[in-house]
Amino acid sequence: MRNFTDIMKSDWDDRARENAKWYIHTGKMDQSDEEFDATGKSEIAKFVLADPAITRGRDLKRLRMLEIGCGIGRMTKHLAEAFGEVHATDVSTEMVNKARERMRDYPNVFLYETNGMDFAALPSDYFDLIFSVYVFQHMPDVSITHSNIRDACRTLKPGGLLKFHVCAVDHEEYARMPKDTWTGAAFTEAEIRRAARENNMRLMSVLGSGTMYCWATLRKPYRQAPARPASRPRIEFFGRSDAPEIKAIPTSGDDASLTIVVSGADQNEADANNVVVEINGQDYSPHYTGLLDENYAEAVGGAVDRLVQINLGIKAKAPHGIVSARVKTVDGKSDAVSIEFLKPQPVIPKITLVSNCIDGGVDVHARGDKAVFRVFASGLDDSATPDNVRVHVNRRILKPDSVSFIPANGVHMAVAKMPEEIAAGEAEIRLQFSDLVSLPAKVNLIG
Image (cartoon, rainbow, N blue to C red; front, side):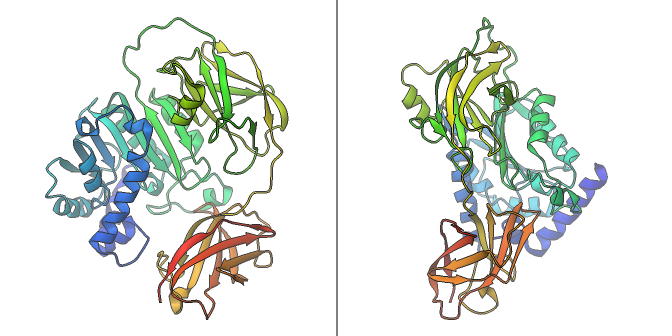
């Protein structure tokens, strides 16, 4: 690992000297401080401040948090405005030096250069929250990610949360790609579950499994949890995860997720590694186990403080029709309930990014070199070609110049050029695969 981390330090020092903002946030080659910092503010609002697992029942001003991979402080300054103390680390000397200059007016920010493997300078059982995004995706070997997670767990207080992002693309083409400090090794759902088990952490959630944007949240257990008499779980309620009133569960698309609410499970012990949902005799691991979301707390009503919510992503290969479902915990298994699983429907393409073909930035032009653009989308398969894929720009329908699978992103990419008569301003981009058309992605075309 030492060889890997020496290379990581050297490579990220070089990137910091060349164009730190671009390598941290590849949305635009030349970014002002205001543009750069604004992207950090929106992502902290989305990934941290809007997460009830982090904010519910907590005064953030009383919490200490650790940011892994701070770069030059794109998110750090916004974390400092929300939390009492922010300790931020990076493997790059150059990044940390730049961050110190930018954070000089934030007395509650403490910056550290690390060796890329651990957090030896930081105390044990100290942080209430540890957060990391767009960092582990660049680790050239899974052993380095495991090492970071292991020592992060050491620094967490009992009851503290570790929320981190990884690239979890589980595709043979991605596995064959050479790995370096930019295209890192995939850290799959299996590796996340392994990290939780090996560090005696409670796995609260794994969201986005198999994609470039996978999030995991782990909780450090309390040292001496109060004793609780064993009790079989009991299913109290179920529904579609986004809509508790809907009882028929899709087996394809974004809504293909079942939520089951149980009593009899220990909130402190139950997690996504030791709770199982059995469907027609087949065991499935949930992607969330924890406190009830607001929509389910409202739907269930009454006292919910002893209930546990379990979310299970449903795949197209799951059985459909009326299925038998039960929940199994370390204390036993529930009685079965009958749930309707709908037949899988064709998957509609979903645009994940639109960027120009010159530098990969999101600044797409109406004409000129940057009028050649790329549309990245999920929901396509190996049969996708320029003959069955179309790019819609407002009302114009374009045949793409090329369509290819991008292993590093786990999505397909269509390349096209803006029509000559397109005007600057807001445009709607859609991707069509055979007869299925995506929802629009709005792009502000530059004249």
